[in-house]
Length: 135
Image (cartoon, rainbow, N blue to C red; front, side, top):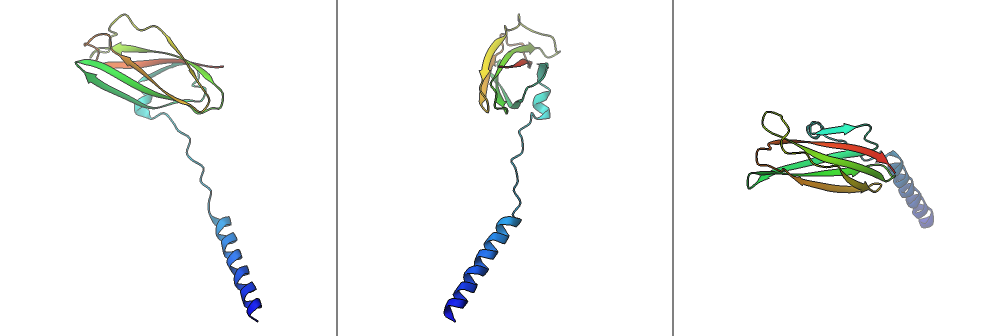
């Protein structure tokens, strides 16, 4: 009798565990996206090829604008990112001679921070120009 009650208790417990495991919804993590506020600072030539810019941080130190941009490769393939910052004054005109293009190899599923400093103190805004190519 005791063995039968023990067997029944174990079977009931196992059934409850299996039932709770089967009814629990599996939620996949949300794919990261580029926020609208960040997208307004980007000028992308062509397709993003799985690249996301989750955050841009801009600070003014000693009256010079400094920018740090996080770039995330959501794909598994490596990509080449060619980028440069275009510095603008308060009226939206370009200041300085312009930066040369820089190259960055961003490995699959990796994140990198790119940095730049405005060439003159009259720069009050910027745009990040990017061209992304698959390897």
